[in-house]
Image (cartoon, rainbow, N blue to C red):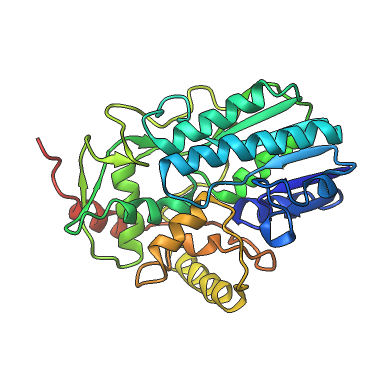
Length: 325
């Protein structure tokens, strides 16, 4: 079975390809000569394809440009899929796409979903909770020069490797022609989760819970970024009481290998890749965003999130600033 993974050189795409061994799984990205904005290389890579899995994203942080990317690239890809006779189109979306439409990014994802739904192709849309690997970048994005202001909304973070497995299972199943949701097994306030990661990597910045703080450019208010009826609850836990030091060593070792093997043409295929670029590799960026490099030769870590000990967790929570009135 031929399966084309659009955005296949990014964090999720590369992990997905590893789950599809035994099939003719092909990565399609700018670095492999495929451009879904212009259509370059699409007809060739989709020839004979049974399944397309789209995990691509915009390379821009601008809300208008992001929406234009998903609108235009979505139409180009879907039309090419119809011409090629694709039997199942799978799209990775984000939990909250239907609830956080004041955010340019989430509005763009909702636009992408709607294009898929009316395309005439058999489809499955998989909405994912935030990845473990993006928490450091999300927190860093909230830096106002004094502290990190984040909304204390509940989120059930999920490991990127678990998302890749869910995508593989969805792709190899009959088209759902509906929206499925995947979330992690634990739910935390975003502020607490950010503090866990910052503390684990000795990042001294403070976190201030603020219901008015922006999340991907929009106020979320009392919104909960949780799956109401998840199709899958992923198995990997984000916070545990065991093995913390060993996991830190594994994460740092993987960062070293990623930096050594990073190709100069690495494609910006995942939303978390964009966040990683902004966060950089400064002290503290040994957090898991560093693993979002477009590397196919580096195996994913056993667990991507910190496994914080009780002491680390206690220190993290003691550092949280009071919520403003």
